[in-house]
Length: 295
Image (cartoon, rainbow, N blue to C red; front, side, top):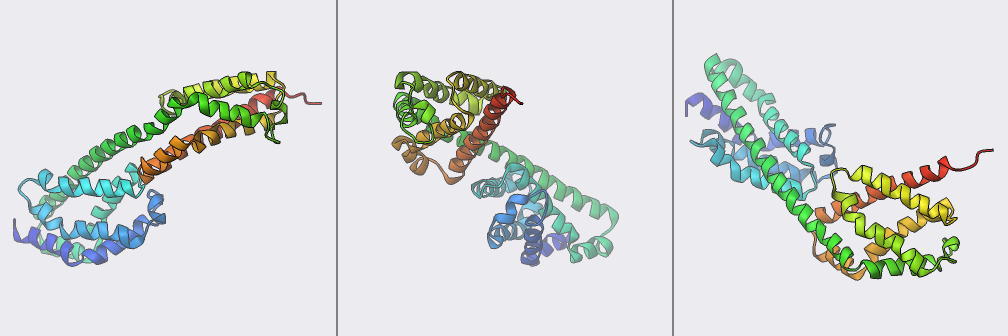
């Protein structure tokens, strides 16, 4: 590797901590990387320091792709474990590259230390390295996301194996809860199928590509059934939330959630469910509202 390139990569090693500190401040305040704002600054800074200190090895290696793959696979795994979305992790990489070029001594090297052809070759090599980095991180994230989805499905497996029990517990609760007095006169045999239908379709409502349309249709039908049984809106919405609660309270569900899932998988599962239920409350409320007499 030519002298000018050696000087270029040596600067990254020598100023790794300073550049990483600037990078960390950038990602924690950048509108495109909001997740980093909530993370420990020293922890994410260490990610960047390690990269800059190994930059020379990756930059000068005979096979750039082979040299960067292990590092960026680990970078992706660590970022994923921290709950950083893939798009933010990729943009953080772009900022790592940018902070090399923005550093004052790098500006001097390019301004006075090398000719135009040398500068072009160096920049092209850096861009190539980061192209491979983006490929490696994206591929690893996709693999990890598939693992997450497979692991998260364990919760649905538990639910579907215990549908009758969970639905029965929900029906018993509705028939005696002080917040659902209009359910008290309905038989367990009439109530339980409502919950069974919800639980049995939950996988589709959460995972199918057209899940939003399916959820809208399902919850409007739920609203129609509730209204036909003369259930007030506030009780129908509360009953729906209790369906979710009885699923989470089931012993098998709790054990899988606590012991069978990684932290980020557990959080993602909860957030997906919460988002669906938020939409459900909206759809049920809207259905009732459209049929209320306005005088």
